[in-house]
Length: 324
Image (cartoon, rainbow, N blue to C red; front, side, top):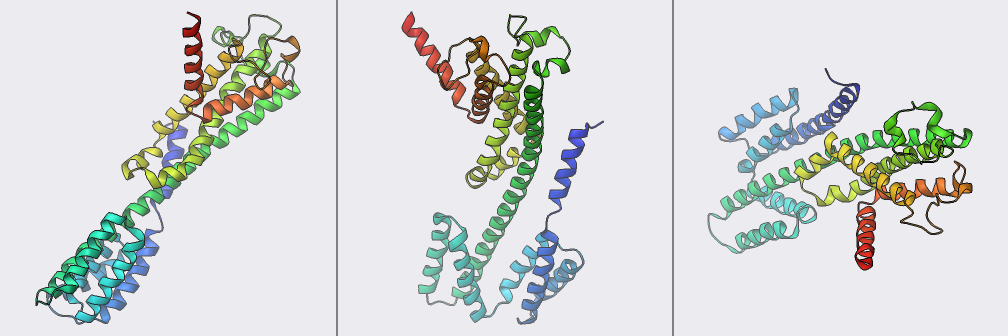
């Protein structure tokens, strides 16, 4: 039995899997059918193309589009072949990386310098290879777009939940002196996050839960703003992992853990100064204090940055080594 969260995310995946490919393939049918009418139909390839075009008309499919384009290459006249090859090279110059484009461009120049009867066949072979490479590029770009959209929607869902919960905690902290304490049970495991003083226990509990929520929101925000750069740099397989639920939850848990460690550092007064929360002064132990909002900011940064807490731990370790 699937949980409501898994069912909801499954519905999201289904929506994004049904992309606008069908509409694009219908447009491809019109383009390929028109092109087929303008070429000389000879040999067994012509009947195969007609069969594939009929299939494409009734069932739009990207694989059929690729098949028709490759089957048409042997039917192109010498003039059309030259123009098509130059046009595809022009597209490749803007789409391929430098090394891949250089290969096709060099091969084209070599063939152009030859004066043999096999030149036409070499051009067809080069055009077939170039077209297949362009197909792979289009597929990769489409998959990247699809994976990025899935990741944005999933992360956006968790980020929206974090914002709602954070607003709730902030409102409770402003409206009620004991904060979230009045909404949670008096459980032993909750007391482990609180202060020793009975007077400040309720407020410190609210501090701890707020720290966790700030780290949660920081982790989601970090994933959202870094997604654009990752889409362009990571491999397709790595990009597929970015929208997986286990990756998103692992990153969120890491952010929450970093925020909790940061909170412990503040409570232990290992980090002190005007920029940090001060839990040592009684006047600062309230939910409208500077320390409360400083805690939110620093725990958000701890969840956002994967380097902040490791840097703090390294600095603390270095200070301990000096004291030995």
